[in-house]
Length: 283
Image (tube, rainbow, N blue to C red; front, side, top):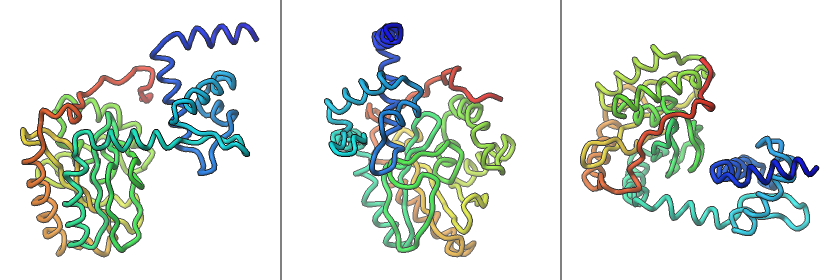
């Protein structure tokens, strides 16, 4: 027992390990059922001892980013975390800047609109305005993420990354995309070139039955890719006849927003970070 305690103490003394463990616990809680998780469940999910996991959870509870139900003793994310996330999401004011456009497009098109931004090798949904038609999307609700290259919004972002960053993302993500069955590197590169030529992503791979989408890139005023505006709808609604109109409307809104995005905003400067070899997918 003392040996385990010594190992835990030594690991806790390493700030990077401590941070990684803390975020692993937070992500486990984010994926938990609504009622929460037991310590043993969290420990199993993150691969830590029950003692270490309990100490991390109690620290998170103390800071208000996790909470424990007094009766069930289950843990879940706390409201302070959502408060921090909301403040972080508005740091660059990108969401506020794009919100009126999402509302206009949703009202005009009658379809669900998404705002996606890049997070390393993924695209994350930071805002969503629902239309009247029930749809399914790769990112789900706000906060959901998907590998760059999967879905129209994530593909639009990937296509317009600087070449060296785009190549690193492709190298990292191709093994992740194989689980979808229709993706390989040749297919992905073909789609990227198509998006770069047309200025939008709209090809349907049939991954979500009955669903269709279209996305345009969102650049800052210096021409750097920042995000993507995306529409999600039913296949029957995104016809060949309607597609040019949807493209035109999204591009017009994107161009209007781009002129107002400050390229020097520190919250938008997300330099590519080399992948951790220990986390790279096996080829």
